[in-house]
Amino acid sequence: MLTYWFFRIASVVVPHLPLRFGYWLATVIAGISFVVQTRARRNAENNLRHVLGPAASRSELEETTRMVFENSAKNYYDLFRVPGMDLDTIKRTVEVRGMENLLGALRAGKGAILVSPHMGNFDLAAQVAAPYSIKVTIPVERLKPQKLFDLITSTRAAKGVRLVPVGGGALKAIYQALEANELVAIAADRDVTKNGIEVEFFGEKTTVPEAPALIASRTGAAIIPAYSVRHPDGTCTIYVEPALQLRSSDNPRDDVRVNTQMITGVMERFIRENPEQWVVLEPVWGN
Image 1 (tube, helix red, strand yellow):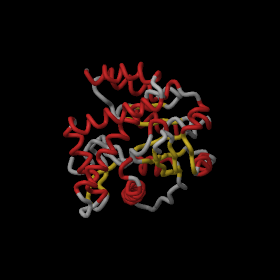
Image 2: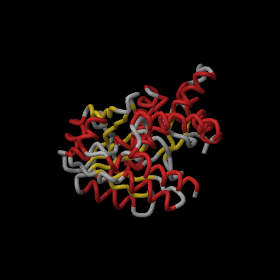
Image 3: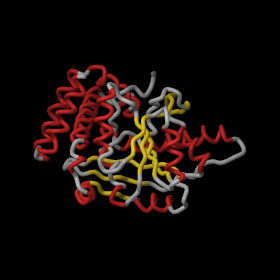
Image 4: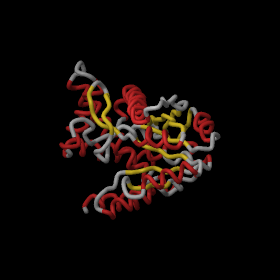
């Protein structure tokens, strides 16, 4: 409940903070969190150890982990800025490169599935479809307590993004969105439900969501890889790549496995380029 009240107060205070002071405050909070949140720090370090490899020094690992905490704190700061941002501000803050890839996929009329790791400024990135009048549905992990989940989701949905909790009616909402030729965005780097498909990720076996590949095989929707990168001035750039060329054979189950590994390989490439922006504080391996 303490977490709820912290975020509740933040949702009221943050919109009134000067931008530079807000980012400074987020950096201070990140530094404190890095020290006191030992479990999250161990999780992040273990994740990054896979990315950086055995040759990475202890100081490199620690500095990269500190940057992950800092980017995560800045993301939360930006989250509570979203309700007060108009579309012009969002356009000035978020640059999109490769939007033609997404628009081209939607012209096929079967919707599109955008797959991305938890990277960069994803709370602002999720809002970028609004200026293009593209409706977005995002399955999200349910948080506890319910009041916290409701607060976070209502803030993220301030500009029209539709958020549905994983499980329950999420699949129905996803299929409805694709049938309406809308965009579904799925984080493909972490198995929230713990019932994903096994892949090789940074040289080690783990599980990731099979939903993107499975749903694409059933609907014909294109899978569009994308990721965002945060810049020091608070702006971010979203890179949208061309649709993946998925395998389609007479063995649908094996197609899902092969295509999920393909998606995972793209997520690996994105993360390897900017490991300090991979803001995952839960274990990706060994859970």
